[in-house]
Image (tube, rainbow, N blue to C red):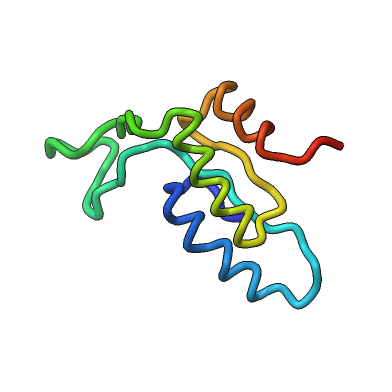
Amino acid sequence: LVNCCSPASVTRAVPLLAAATATQRRIGGYANTFHPIPADWRLDGDKATDGLISLRDDLDPDAYAAHAIRWLAAGATVIGGCCGTRPAHIRRLHSLLPAT
């Protein structure tokens, strides 16, 4: 699994994970909803880009689910949410799965 990265990173990683598995294994990801972290970022730094990273405002449950649909299509068998996702995001992900 890939975890605590952008939804776009999970989208890029899932096909690579699928190609790298010799047998049927669980693959997938849990993305966060943070803005990208600058390369020179520091939690305790004094630059304007340092400190706490804010959440993106473009990843509501439906937008997040649109990413997850691509993960499933690429072979993900495990999907979820990390930092910044809320119960509404997980409910929306659950709605993508076939009833069992």
